Amino acid sequence: MSLHLSLQEQSAIDQPPGIRAIHHQLCARYNGDWVKAEHDMMEALAETIWEAQRYGRGLDVNAYMTRLRKLVGLGQEEKARLNPHEVGLMDTK
Image (cartoon, rainbow, N blue to C red):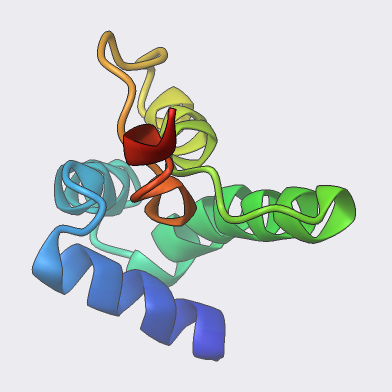
């Protein structure tokens, strides 16, 4: 249930940008069945969380969005996003 709430909140505020459109496209694919759509999206979210925990790092928004985009037939975005855990790191280099 909490993953559904997470996805609904992400979609409502379109964060990361583009997730709302993906959510809408998947809902349309399943004739408005948002539960099925979100189950597909949960796989991407769960894999991203697992990967972060497994490798001891923050969530990779680029990997997450690539997984979500693949669900609707899109590939990796052309421009990488700054991950939240990387904010400030660019200033130290």
